[in-house]
Amino acid sequence: MKFKILWSAWAIPTPRPFNDDWLSKLAREKWWKYIRNSSCFWLEDIALLIDCPESIWKSANKENIENIKNLFITHWHPDHAFWLRVVLESRYNFRLWKTEYPINLYMPKQVYDDLKKVYPSIDFFVNERWTAKLNFIEHGEKVQIENITVEAVWYQWAKSSTYWYKFSSNWKTLLYAPCDTISLEQDLSGLDVLVHECWIFSYDIVKSEISFPDAIDRIRKYKPKKTIFTHIEHVEIERRWLNYLGKMKEKYSDVDFQFAYDGFEINL
Ligand SMILES: [Zn+2]
Image (cartoon, rainbow, N blue to C red):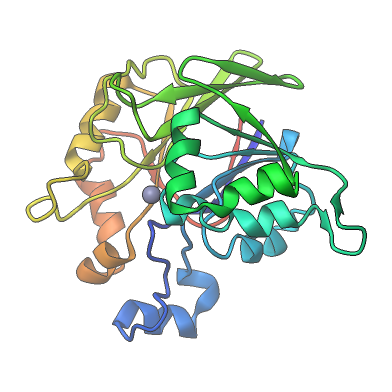
């Protein structure tokens, strides 16, 4: 399986638009080096995209992604779903007023219901323009797409509004868990690769998200063969300087992990 972390930021991209903080200024000067956009994930083998953050068009063009067959959504948050229009309308023929090849769109019903409340036009694209064939996938359910199995995973046993997706093929497994991982009640043993949210270094201030030390403890406990932290906050790096991620690598040198960047490839 050939994966790519297309984008590796939290909701706020780097450079942060309409802001003059030092990191945004630096990234505007050296765009290629410091840019991060909101999280999304790509599996090349089956042309599968997870999530549609704002400006997905930019990443798709940069990475030469010409065709998306399968689209999975983790949750309704704007940085994960609000640019669905761009992807879905890419299939719409505005001359013939019809969709020629609808995208296979997968998400749990709870996610669809949540999304419809804040992004009602999803209904228009699915049910009026038929740009997507909607498939509900619930916790524990698996979809077989060619030789790859995709499983939906709640992050907590109570009815969750955020889901992760687990990929298996040829006895290899990868779990993509980019957001909202604080209340984990799952056993994450036996993974080859865990792509996990990095989240918060300022855990003295922010209590509503998983702290970085807790995320590290989770890695110590479940021992995935490889861990990549994504969903990295512009605000946190801006607050702590560029070498902070390197410092964290040194501080937790007993744990094998990497920080993602835009375009990070994983071959499994
Ligand atoms: Zn998020």
